[in-house]
Image (cartoon, rainbow, N blue to C red; front, side, top):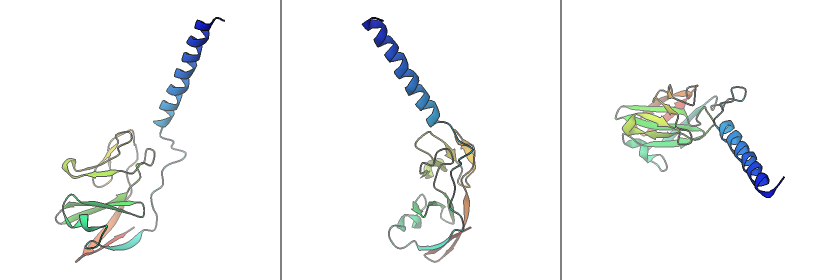
Length: 139
């Protein structure tokens, strides 16, 4: 084998390895699903940092594996924060009324339902109860 053949074969091998890694990174392993927090029951004061963003429509905050978002003046939602595709933390996009995974582009409705993949499973939804500035999030 001459030098040119060696370099060509080396390049093909590297391309194969890179392609395999890329495809594997987009694989949703159903045998190892991303798990959502269980037996959730906590209370936060939305008048205190780091939860003050929840006082305003469009604000969001994270606690114990859950994203909490103020979707309207009268409504909050609480969902598991890990994208069900590969576990990346989702972000609330008020202007698009959705949760967005920045890694591979999955999007979810504010009730956790999948809008588009690669995720195929919804985000776990939790109950919320607001009493004054005290917000309870529970299973």
